[in-house]
Amino acid sequence: MRHVHYYIGNGKGKTSAAVGQAVRAAGHGWRVCFTQFMKNNTSGEIEVLESIKGIDVIKGKPIKSFYVFMDEAEKNDVYCNQNSHLEKIISIAGKFDMLILDEISDAVELGIIDLDKLIDFINSSRSELEIVMTGHTMNEAIVETCDYVTEMKSKKHPYEKGVSARKGIEF
Image (cartoon, rainbow, N blue to C red; front, side, top):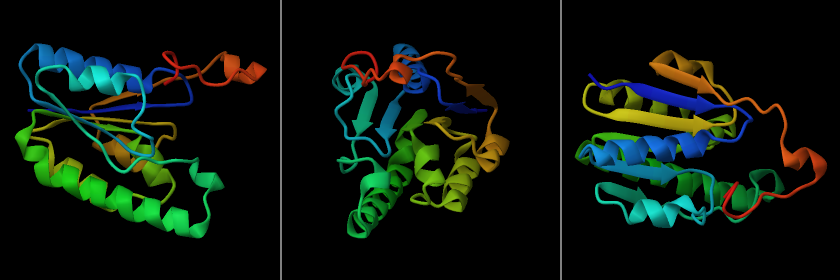
């Protein structure tokens, strides 16, 4: 039986934990699909993951701005693209042993990805697919589907002193 993992919280390390899980699984011969929601496809881990045998990185249309700063037309475009991306991932998930849905719960929290569709997919895939999800906000309905829930909690971060995200560290 496969399990469902959920890395959540406002602390650093959710995507890093998911990437580590992908590398570990690929190292044991698993076929891994890694995909991100609500990101711009330029994080440092993408190129490295693409070079690892057994890991397929499936990119959606890049998000060019924070959602809160988008106008309604941009938000509608993001909604359509992110849902199309999820549909694509669902359609190919059966080819993999592990699926990583990075920042999926943020897309759910923003009302971009339908929670019921995600829950139905998780429940229908549990026996054959290990699923790893990340996001800042804990969604109790997602938690109910999970076997592992790990909360990353920030105690101190340079951002609090005005330091912007740094290449190679935060992205």
